[in-house]
Length: 286
Image (cartoon, rainbow, N blue to C red; front, side, top):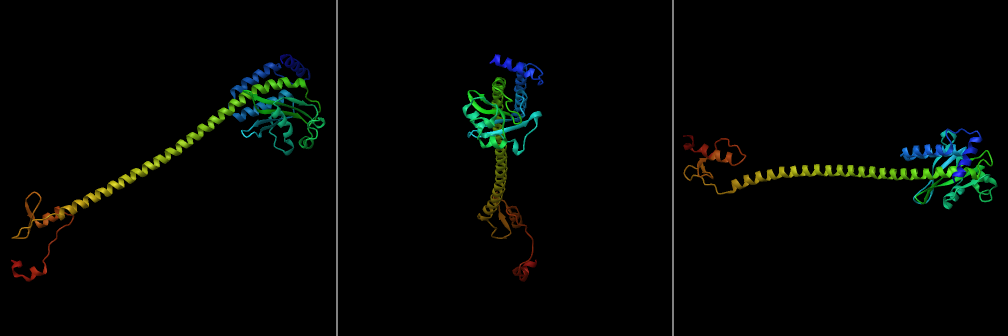
């Protein structure tokens, strides 16, 4: 492997393509950067851009396997980090599926003449030429693939180009899997926070409603107690003076005026007037 990497590095330099360091040093530098990038989408974009530069490709695609087994093209990039959105920038699903299912890297020097894929509808329609595809393997399982291509040149890639991309993909897969787990944890945490806030709001609302109901219950209870007290006070036997009929014996045994008793034992206020019988009785005027 390292002998192949060394040969690839020498060939890569001899072809005149720019390199800031030798191949191994560059991959280590990229690895450090990936380790520092924890957000998933920035990491995927960075991985794709570096894979395109490493392979000397025109465009690249990064695919991840969904929980239901389907392939999700998460990144489509051209040289210089340009995002690809046009219809002609679609990827060959048949080639991708082969790479993911077999979990084996491969190179197509001319996809249109390859016996395995030459008759594939996507290969014919997209006029695919040089293709290189490597699986993303993490913890013994395939989580996706890196797919790079050059549609204008045949034989752009060879078997010697695979080792650097495989080494890079193996490192990238670990960081991608970690970022996916971190993203899933963050989503779960955010979901839990939302549920806690919603539940707290529900409990606060329920508490306020319970407190309001309790206050109303207390108010009504006080009204009932007051009414009951009034009813009980006026429902007892009331001793009235048999001689003058103007005084009543209260609960303390005191003889008080009828007006005072009524005012202190009820909410009524006594006013004075002359009834018809008294008005006709001359003695009432004395």
